[in-house]
Image (cartoon, rainbow, N blue to C red):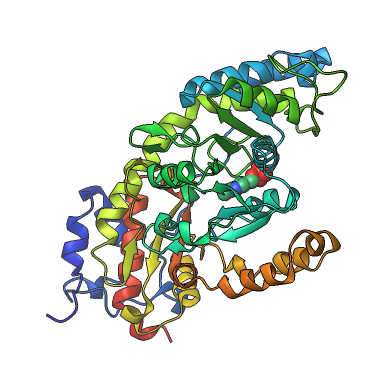
Length: 449
Ligand SMILES: *Cc1c(COP(=O)(O)O)cnc(C)c1O
């Protein structure tokens, strides 16, 4: 047997007996043929593996409504005149086992505040993953610092700690690892390098609520950790964010910086405002939504994890499908997206986009992950600005361009396929449909040209 064939019997055996009824919608002629071959792909006009719907996101809990109406009628809409933002900060710090929390307007403003308080300044360099949402770089650019990429490990989807040291210069002031998709980065290795070179570490945990590294929550392992509560996230409030930290002085400064630079806590008293700051405050309405959404996140994460582990087990047996690998020390992932790699050589060299289109046609929503953002226009736009030309020499920018070859990340961008988190809130039968749809495409790849 050269390539592994999936018999219809094998696939049914992996699913519950109750699923048999749903399989009947497939052409009966295929039963007994021993294979998915000769079942028409949905993209070619055949029946979908998953004709039904998927869980919606976000999910509203009506029991939160009286509290929100009361807050609206009171006119106490901002954090200065009400208690809800402070209550959220306290509860979120507890949930995440962090000493302190500062709630912010968004994940982006949390990152901007954290980097600024830890001293990232104009002309500095910040080491960062090339596989992330664009907001990670925007936070660095906000401080007129240079994002310096550390190549991705395509197996883990994360920054490769072995490649950090080669990118450190005398201008480097911080490392900004991203726990992308809720997959924890190898924080021990990152923190060790940071300590040796006197660098600060800000964790971009904007997709990593309650994921764990050596049993500890991501976002509590560096100097500061940043979170997003934008509508698509596991803890949604339309917009919102948070900074977690365990150092009182640093957290006092975060509070101050997010609140126009007003003094806070035990900060040294100076006349007027001691710090430059912004207005990055969270609103009362956001906090009330978050306090309500917090009631479901642990249960939701358990469902996502159990379905993800099930997919890991089933998908790895399909030729050309390689699920993510957890980094050293990662003990729990939370799957803002569920990622795997599609190796097109095992699929007759059918491009990833065609594979995704075929999967979507079967009723399985899938996307291709992040593109090669190290080639996005914002980098040259920044480097050609008056400010960056003043701050960075021509030879420094030339070196940046020469080093901007990221083979690991290029491979990852070419191969990644992802399912959005709410897909993982589906039933076991939904997960079987995902496995069956990919198997069906594999077995019928000859009809996909
Ligand atoms: C969502 C997100 C952000 C930014 O958060 P906003 O709340 O949208 O500002 C930053 N980094 C990553 C990895 C994200 O997913």
